[in-house]
Image 1: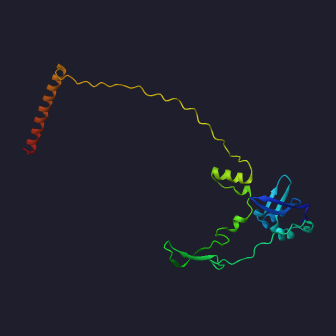
Image 2: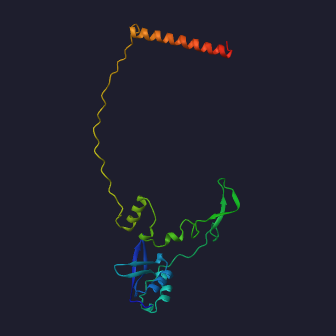
Image 3: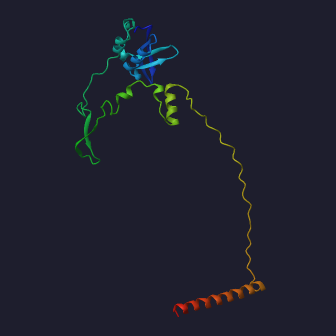
Length: 219
């Protein structure tokens, strides 16, 4: 495949400048799949407005193999000289340190990852990779999503402005109900009749249970 156009470009990403090329080539479904398989999605980005691909400078060896006329690509400025590689004094370059329990005792044949470990350390390589807004395609909280869009300087499409609270109705106290308790007069004819009925019922029940007790031999 041959390039149609190629230009050098440097873009900011999460506070880090990324250098690379903005390339354009004829559409071919088979070659497009080969292109995506050869270059990880962290190192390429489709620009729909320009109908071009931005490819990170780390992928130059792959681009040389994919495009026959890659020699026309402009040269990028050299990178800054990186610091010399030093061996970690904690793990001696192994990435593992002896595991200690809460009392400070070393557990035999048990290890934990050192801070210099490239994957599980304090500053793993995956944190140094360029991050894009479309990489966050998983469920996340409103606060985390808002932070992502704010980091990229893009308005959050899911932002909902705070709603004003409805006006509270004035408090109306309940009316006070005064309850008056009165003592009943037990000397009325109705109470006298009720007392006589209760006395008669009590006598019948007593007689009934005594008769039942004699039949069972309890008395």
